Length: 104
Image 1: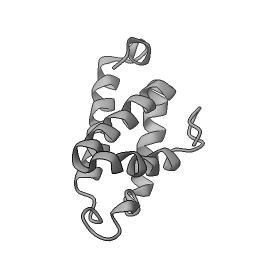
Image 2: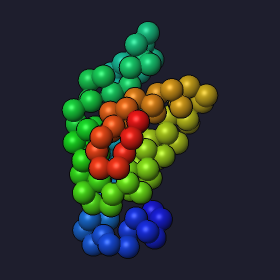
Image 3: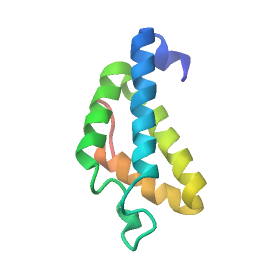
Image 4: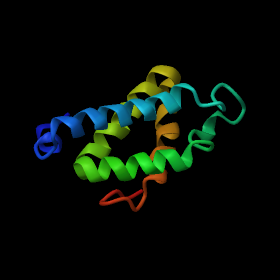
């Protein structure tokens, strides 16, 4: 995590942020639409929870922490899908539109 994002966070908040990012990555790993004709709809069934996580990440560390979380998800998706990852991660970016300083 970048020092700026973690500077105002308590150790408990840093731990919680890590758990939330892990949950987002887990959503990508276990998306029921993965490897189906609907795989391009990442977050379709977990949209509400992903949005809640975005709100919590914004509360914990603001925009910088949200960027780090999105980058972590994109990195995981890149391992799974290669060039398709950018398109899939876009679903998370759009889901977070309007949370704090996040803009789609």
